Image (tube, rainbow, N blue to C red; front, side):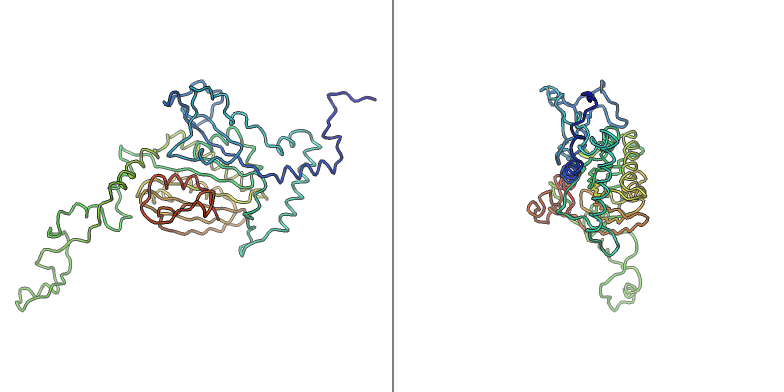
Length: 409
Protein backbone atom coordinates (compact mmCIF):
# COMPACT_ATOMS: atom_id res chain seq x y z
CA UNK A 1 0.00 0.00 0.00
CA UNK A 2 1.56 3.20 -1.13
CA UNK A 3 1.73 6.22 1.09
CA UNK A 4 0.41 9.48 -0.33
CA UNK A 5 2.78 12.40 -0.63
CA UNK A 6 0.68 14.57 1.69
CA UNK A 7 1.06 12.18 4.65
CA UNK A 8 4.76 11.41 4.19
CA UNK A 9 7.23 13.05 6.60
CA UNK A 10 10.92 12.81 5.88
CA UNK A 11 11.77 13.88 9.44
CA UNK A 12 9.65 11.12 11.02
CA UNK A 13 11.20 8.58 8.67
CA UNK A 14 14.55 9.15 10.38
CA UNK A 15 15.53 6.78 13.19
CA UNK A 16 14.54 7.92 16.67
CA UNK A 17 18.18 8.19 17.73
CA UNK A 18 18.94 10.65 14.94
CA UNK A 19 15.87 12.72 15.78
CA UNK A 20 17.00 12.90 19.41
CA UNK A 21 20.41 14.16 18.28
CA UNK A 22 18.66 16.89 16.29
CA UNK A 23 16.66 17.86 19.38
CA UNK A 24 19.87 18.06 21.40
CA UNK A 25 21.46 20.31 18.82
CA UNK A 26 18.49 22.67 18.74
CA UNK A 27 18.23 22.90 22.53
CA UNK A 28 21.94 23.58 23.02
CA UNK A 29 22.14 26.21 20.31
CA UNK A 30 22.98 29.67 21.61
CA UNK A 31 20.80 32.44 20.23
CA UNK A 32 19.46 35.81 21.35
CA UNK A 33 16.45 37.95 20.46
CA UNK A 34 16.02 41.68 21.09
CA UNK A 35 12.49 43.11 21.24
CA UNK A 36 11.79 46.84 21.25
CA UNK A 37 10.06 49.56 19.21
CA UNK A 38 11.37 52.27 16.90
CA UNK A 39 10.14 55.67 15.79
CA UNK A 40 8.72 55.83 12.29
CA UNK A 41 10.37 58.71 10.43
CA UNK A 42 10.07 60.34 7.02
CA UNK A 43 12.97 62.54 5.93
CA UNK A 44 14.11 62.69 9.55
CA UNK A 45 10.72 63.71 10.98
CA UNK A 46 8.63 61.44 13.18
CA UNK A 47 5.27 60.48 11.73
CA UNK A 48 2.26 58.58 13.06
CA UNK A 49 1.20 55.30 11.49
CA UNK A 50 -2.59 55.47 11.64
CA UNK A 51 -2.90 52.48 9.28
CA UNK A 52 -1.11 50.06 11.58
CA UNK A 53 -1.78 46.44 10.62
CA UNK A 54 -1.65 45.07 14.17
CA UNK A 55 -2.98 47.14 17.02
CA UNK A 56 -0.82 46.99 20.16
CA UNK A 57 -2.54 48.53 23.20
CA UNK A 58 -0.41 51.22 24.81
CA UNK A 59 2.06 51.60 21.93
CA UNK A 60 2.00 55.17 20.53
CA UNK A 61 1.21 55.63 16.85
CA UNK A 62 4.65 57.07 16.07
CA UNK A 63 6.31 53.80 17.15
CA UNK A 64 6.51 50.49 15.28
CA UNK A 65 7.50 47.05 16.67
CA UNK A 66 11.11 46.00 16.21
CA UNK A 67 12.78 42.65 16.84
CA UNK A 68 16.18 41.23 15.99
CA UNK A 69 17.43 37.65 15.99
CA UNK A 70 20.55 38.72 17.87
CA UNK A 71 21.57 40.98 20.74
CA UNK A 72 21.25 44.55 19.47
CA UNK A 73 22.08 47.10 22.20
CA UNK A 74 21.00 49.99 19.98
CA UNK A 75 17.38 48.90 20.42
CA UNK A 76 17.76 49.46 24.17
CA UNK A 77 19.08 53.01 23.83
CA UNK A 78 16.96 55.98 24.92
CA UNK A 79 19.35 58.85 24.19
CA UNK A 80 19.61 57.60 20.58
CA UNK A 81 16.36 55.67 20.05
CA UNK A 82 16.04 53.36 17.05
CA UNK A 83 14.25 54.74 14.00
CA UNK A 84 12.50 53.22 11.01
CA UNK A 85 12.88 55.53 7.98
CA UNK A 86 10.11 55.01 5.45
CA UNK A 87 11.55 57.37 2.84
CA UNK A 88 14.28 54.91 1.80
CA UNK A 89 11.94 51.96 1.21
CA UNK A 90 13.18 49.89 4.16
CA UNK A 91 9.77 49.60 5.79
CA UNK A 92 9.19 46.18 4.26
CA UNK A 93 12.56 44.88 5.46
CA UNK A 94 11.82 45.07 9.17
CA UNK A 95 12.91 41.76 10.64
CA UNK A 96 10.52 42.08 13.56
CA UNK A 97 7.48 41.46 11.35
CA UNK A 98 8.91 38.12 10.18
CA UNK A 99 10.57 36.94 13.38
CA UNK A 100 8.60 33.71 13.32
CA UNK A 101 8.92 30.82 15.73
CA UNK A 102 12.17 29.51 17.09
CA UNK A 103 13.19 26.02 15.98
CA UNK A 104 12.13 24.24 19.22
CA UNK A 105 8.74 25.98 19.23
CA UNK A 106 8.20 25.20 15.54
CA UNK A 107 8.91 21.51 16.18
CA UNK A 108 6.54 21.46 19.15
CA UNK A 109 3.76 22.63 16.84
CA UNK A 110 4.55 20.12 14.08
CA UNK A 111 2.91 16.95 15.37
CA UNK A 112 1.98 15.21 18.60
CA UNK A 113 4.75 12.62 18.24
CA UNK A 114 7.47 15.24 17.77
CA UNK A 115 5.99 17.28 20.62
CA UNK A 116 6.21 14.29 22.97
CA UNK A 117 9.77 13.45 21.91
CA UNK A 118 11.01 17.02 22.24
CA UNK A 119 9.27 17.49 25.60
CA UNK A 120 10.86 14.30 26.91
CA UNK A 121 14.27 15.43 25.65
CA UNK A 122 13.86 18.81 27.33
CA UNK A 123 12.83 17.18 30.61
CA UNK A 124 15.80 14.80 30.49
CA UNK A 125 18.23 17.65 29.86
CA UNK A 126 16.71 19.60 32.75
CA UNK A 127 17.28 16.70 35.15
CA UNK A 128 20.87 16.26 33.98
CA UNK A 129 21.60 19.98 34.27
CA UNK A 130 20.10 20.07 37.76
CA UNK A 131 22.25 17.15 38.86
CA UNK A 132 25.41 18.81 37.54
CA UNK A 133 24.61 22.31 38.75
CA UNK A 134 26.10 23.99 41.81
CA UNK A 135 24.02 25.69 44.48
CA UNK A 136 24.89 28.49 46.86
CA UNK A 137 24.37 28.66 50.61
CA UNK A 138 20.68 29.48 50.09
CA UNK A 139 20.07 26.47 47.88
CA UNK A 140 19.66 28.49 44.68
CA UNK A 141 21.08 27.07 41.47
CA UNK A 142 23.91 29.23 40.16
CA UNK A 143 23.91 30.28 36.53
CA UNK A 144 27.05 29.22 34.72
CA UNK A 145 28.32 32.34 33.02
CA UNK A 146 30.21 30.34 30.39
CA UNK A 147 27.19 28.21 29.50
CA UNK A 148 25.10 30.46 27.25
CA UNK A 149 23.04 27.75 25.59
CA UNK A 150 19.39 28.40 24.96
CA UNK A 151 17.52 31.62 24.31
CA UNK A 152 18.61 34.96 25.74
CA UNK A 153 15.82 37.53 25.54
CA UNK A 154 16.47 41.29 25.64
CA UNK A 155 13.42 43.50 26.08
CA UNK A 156 13.07 47.26 26.44
CA UNK A 157 10.62 48.88 28.85
CA UNK A 158 7.90 49.90 28.32
CA UNK A 159 7.56 49.53 24.54
CA UNK A 160 9.40 46.24 24.16
CA UNK A 161 7.31 44.66 26.92
CA UNK A 162 4.13 45.69 25.10
CA UNK A 163 5.39 44.25 21.80
CA UNK A 164 6.50 41.02 23.46
CA UNK A 165 3.12 40.41 25.10
CA UNK A 166 1.08 41.05 21.96
CA UNK A 167 3.29 39.53 19.25
CA UNK A 168 5.80 37.11 20.76
CA UNK A 169 4.39 35.71 24.04
CA UNK A 170 5.66 32.21 23.21
CA UNK A 171 9.27 33.33 23.67
CA UNK A 172 8.88 33.49 27.46
CA UNK A 173 8.42 29.73 27.74
CA UNK A 174 11.72 29.11 25.93
CA UNK A 175 13.94 31.84 27.40
CA UNK A 176 16.70 30.88 29.83
CA UNK A 177 17.94 34.43 30.40
CA UNK A 178 15.76 37.53 30.26
CA UNK A 179 17.11 41.07 30.35
CA UNK A 180 14.68 44.00 30.80
CA UNK A 181 15.94 47.54 30.37
CA UNK A 182 14.02 50.80 30.63
CA UNK A 183 13.29 53.93 32.60
CA UNK A 184 10.43 55.44 34.56
CA UNK A 185 9.65 59.12 35.03
CA UNK A 186 6.64 60.07 37.20
CA UNK A 187 3.96 62.05 35.45
CA UNK A 188 3.70 65.70 36.57
CA UNK A 189 0.69 66.61 38.69
CA UNK A 190 -0.99 70.02 38.85
CA UNK A 191 1.41 71.36 36.28
CA UNK A 192 4.42 70.80 38.54
CA UNK A 193 7.34 68.76 37.39
CA UNK A 194 8.52 66.35 40.11
CA UNK A 195 11.97 66.37 38.53
CA UNK A 196 12.44 70.01 39.59
CA UNK A 197 15.34 69.97 42.08
CA UNK A 198 13.73 72.77 44.13
CA UNK A 199 10.64 70.72 44.96
CA UNK A 200 12.27 68.30 47.40
CA UNK A 201 15.14 69.03 49.75
CA UNK A 202 14.70 65.94 51.91
CA UNK A 203 17.51 64.04 50.21
CA UNK A 204 19.98 66.93 50.05
CA UNK A 205 22.87 67.11 52.44
CA UNK A 206 22.70 70.89 52.03
CA UNK A 207 19.33 72.45 51.07
CA UNK A 208 19.12 74.40 47.85
CA UNK A 209 18.16 77.51 49.85
CA UNK A 210 21.74 77.75 51.06
CA UNK A 211 22.83 78.67 47.52
CA UNK A 212 20.74 81.85 47.79
CA UNK A 213 22.65 83.29 50.76
CA UNK A 214 24.36 86.45 49.53
CA UNK A 215 27.32 86.38 51.93
CA UNK A 216 28.62 84.85 55.09
CA UNK A 217 27.76 88.05 57.02
CA UNK A 218 24.03 87.69 56.47
CA UNK A 219 22.15 86.65 59.62
CA UNK A 220 20.65 83.19 59.65
CA UNK A 221 17.24 82.41 61.09
CA UNK A 222 16.96 80.32 64.24
CA UNK A 223 19.13 80.07 67.35
CA UNK A 224 22.68 78.87 67.15
CA UNK A 225 25.37 78.48 69.75
CA UNK A 226 28.29 80.90 69.58
CA UNK A 227 31.84 79.67 69.89
CA UNK A 228 33.43 83.14 70.40
CA UNK A 229 35.34 83.89 73.56
CA UNK A 230 33.29 86.10 75.89
CA UNK A 231 34.78 89.17 77.55
CA UNK A 232 34.71 90.03 81.23
CA UNK A 233 31.68 92.22 80.67
CA UNK A 234 28.67 90.45 82.24
CA UNK A 235 26.50 91.56 79.34
CA UNK A 236 28.51 89.39 77.00
CA UNK A 237 28.82 86.36 79.27
CA UNK A 238 25.34 85.28 78.32
CA UNK A 239 26.72 84.42 74.92
CA UNK A 240 28.13 81.25 76.42
CA UNK A 241 24.70 79.96 77.43
CA UNK A 242 22.34 81.75 75.08
CA UNK A 243 22.11 83.25 71.65
CA UNK A 244 25.10 85.06 70.28
CA UNK A 245 24.73 88.78 69.82
CA UNK A 246 27.08 88.67 66.85
CA UNK A 247 25.83 87.82 63.35
CA UNK A 248 26.14 84.06 62.89
CA UNK A 249 27.49 82.31 59.84
CA UNK A 250 25.13 80.07 57.90
CA UNK A 251 25.95 76.50 57.10
CA UNK A 252 28.70 75.84 54.62
CA UNK A 253 27.62 76.47 51.08
CA UNK A 254 28.28 74.05 48.25
CA UNK A 255 29.71 75.16 44.97
CA UNK A 256 27.09 75.52 42.24
CA UNK A 257 27.15 72.82 39.57
CA UNK A 258 29.44 73.25 36.63
CA UNK A 259 28.07 74.48 33.33
CA UNK A 260 28.50 71.07 31.73
CA UNK A 261 26.67 69.32 34.56
CA UNK A 262 23.86 71.86 34.39
CA UNK A 263 23.56 71.23 30.68
CA UNK A 264 23.27 67.48 31.25
CA UNK A 265 20.70 68.04 34.00
CA UNK A 266 18.61 70.19 31.68
CA UNK A 267 18.70 67.51 28.98
CA UNK A 268 17.46 64.73 31.27
CA UNK A 269 13.75 65.76 31.27
CA UNK A 270 13.82 66.12 27.49
CA UNK A 271 15.51 62.78 26.80
CA UNK A 272 13.59 60.83 29.45
CA UNK A 273 10.02 62.19 29.32
CA UNK A 274 7.13 60.64 31.19
CA UNK A 275 4.86 58.16 29.41
CA UNK A 276 1.19 58.60 28.69
CA UNK A 277 -1.38 57.12 31.06
CA UNK A 278 -2.39 54.39 28.58
CA UNK A 279 1.21 53.39 27.91
CA UNK A 280 2.07 53.29 31.61
CA UNK A 281 -0.98 51.22 32.58
CA UNK A 282 -0.64 48.73 29.72
CA UNK A 283 3.11 48.36 30.27
CA UNK A 284 2.73 47.66 33.99
CA UNK A 285 0.09 45.00 33.30
CA UNK A 286 2.28 43.42 30.62
CA UNK A 287 5.31 43.53 32.92
CA UNK A 288 3.42 41.81 35.75
CA UNK A 289 2.24 39.11 33.32
CA UNK A 290 5.79 38.66 32.03
CA UNK A 291 7.25 38.19 35.52
CA UNK A 292 4.46 35.83 36.59
CA UNK A 293 5.10 33.71 33.49
CA UNK A 294 8.84 33.53 34.17
CA UNK A 295 8.37 32.64 37.85
CA UNK A 296 5.54 30.09 38.08
CA UNK A 297 4.78 27.88 41.06
CA UNK A 298 6.47 24.89 39.41
CA UNK A 299 9.88 24.57 37.81
CA UNK A 300 10.84 26.88 34.97
CA UNK A 301 13.56 26.83 32.29
CA UNK A 302 14.55 30.35 33.33
CA UNK A 303 18.06 30.61 34.76
CA UNK A 304 18.25 34.33 35.53
CA UNK A 305 16.24 37.52 35.20
CA UNK A 306 18.13 40.81 35.02
CA UNK A 307 16.52 44.23 34.98
CA UNK A 308 18.06 47.69 34.63
CA UNK A 309 15.52 50.36 35.58
CA UNK A 310 16.54 54.02 35.46
CA UNK A 311 14.78 56.77 37.41
CA UNK A 312 15.96 60.05 35.85
CA UNK A 313 16.38 63.15 37.97
CA UNK A 314 18.46 64.18 40.96
CA UNK A 315 15.65 63.61 43.47
CA UNK A 316 14.24 60.45 41.90
CA UNK A 317 15.16 58.03 44.69
CA UNK A 318 11.69 58.30 46.25
CA UNK A 319 10.09 57.04 43.03
CA UNK A 320 11.92 53.71 43.25
CA UNK A 321 9.90 52.43 46.19
CA UNK A 322 7.24 55.05 46.92
CA UNK A 323 5.54 55.32 43.52
CA UNK A 324 2.70 52.87 42.88
CA UNK A 325 3.45 53.00 39.14
CA UNK A 326 7.12 52.13 39.60
CA UNK A 327 8.05 49.01 37.59
CA UNK A 328 10.23 47.82 40.48
CA UNK A 329 7.27 47.40 42.81
CA UNK A 330 5.36 45.43 40.17
CA UNK A 331 8.36 43.17 39.57
CA UNK A 332 8.75 42.39 43.26
CA UNK A 333 5.04 41.67 43.70
CA UNK A 334 4.95 39.33 40.69
CA UNK A 335 7.90 37.11 41.68
CA UNK A 336 6.33 34.19 43.54
CA UNK A 337 9.61 32.66 44.63
CA UNK A 338 13.27 33.33 44.00
CA UNK A 339 16.51 34.85 45.20
CA UNK A 340 16.43 38.57 44.46
CA UNK A 341 19.51 40.78 44.63
CA UNK A 342 19.07 44.53 44.13
CA UNK A 343 21.73 47.19 43.74
CA UNK A 344 20.68 50.84 43.98
CA UNK A 345 23.01 53.35 42.30
CA UNK A 346 22.44 56.98 43.30
CA UNK A 347 23.92 59.68 41.11
CA UNK A 348 23.58 63.37 40.34
CA UNK A 349 21.41 62.80 37.24
CA UNK A 350 19.33 59.85 38.35
CA UNK A 351 18.95 56.63 40.28
CA UNK A 352 19.63 53.26 38.70
CA UNK A 353 18.44 49.93 40.02
CA UNK A 354 19.92 46.59 39.02
CA UNK A 355 17.75 43.63 39.93
CA UNK A 356 18.84 40.02 39.49
CA UNK A 357 16.44 37.19 40.29
CA UNK A 358 16.96 33.43 40.14
CA UNK A 359 14.09 30.97 40.52
CA UNK A 360 13.50 29.27 43.87
CA UNK A 361 9.90 28.07 44.20
CA UNK A 362 8.01 28.83 47.41
CA UNK A 363 10.90 30.88 48.85
CA UNK A 364 11.83 34.56 48.62
CA UNK A 365 15.28 35.82 49.54
CA UNK A 366 15.80 39.57 49.02
CA UNK A 367 19.00 41.56 49.49
CA UNK A 368 19.65 45.23 48.69
CA UNK A 369 22.83 47.29 48.49
CA UNK A 370 23.37 51.02 47.91
CA UNK A 371 26.32 52.62 46.13
CA UNK A 372 27.23 56.04 44.77
CA UNK A 373 26.94 56.19 41.00
CA UNK A 374 30.07 57.58 39.42
CA UNK A 375 31.12 58.06 35.85
CA UNK A 376 32.48 54.86 34.33
CA UNK A 377 30.80 52.45 36.76
CA UNK A 378 28.92 50.69 33.96
CA UNK A 379 30.62 48.05 31.83
CA UNK A 380 29.15 47.08 28.50
CA UNK A 381 28.71 43.63 27.02
CA UNK A 382 32.45 43.42 26.50
CA UNK A 383 33.03 43.25 30.24
CA UNK A 384 36.08 44.73 31.88
CA UNK A 385 37.68 45.54 28.54
CA UNK A 386 35.01 48.18 27.85
CA UNK A 387 34.86 49.56 31.39
CA UNK A 388 36.10 53.08 31.83
CA UNK A 389 37.81 54.33 34.91
CA UNK A 390 35.27 55.31 37.54
CA UNK A 391 35.24 58.90 38.69
CA UNK A 392 33.98 62.31 37.64
CA UNK A 393 30.49 63.60 36.98
CA UNK A 394 27.71 61.68 35.30
CA UNK A 395 26.46 62.52 31.84
CA UNK A 396 23.50 61.45 29.75
CA UNK A 397 25.72 58.95 27.97
CA UNK A 398 26.36 57.21 31.30
CA UNK A 399 22.61 56.91 31.88
CA UNK A 400 22.19 55.45 28.41
CA UNK A 401 25.11 53.06 28.95
CA UNK A 402 23.35 51.82 32.08
CA UNK A 403 20.34 50.86 29.97
CA UNK A 404 22.37 49.27 27.17
CA UNK A 405 24.86 47.44 29.38
CA UNK A 406 24.48 43.82 30.40
CA UNK A 407 24.67 42.74 34.03
CA UNK A 408 27.97 41.00 34.70
CA UNK A 409 27.08 39.16 37.89
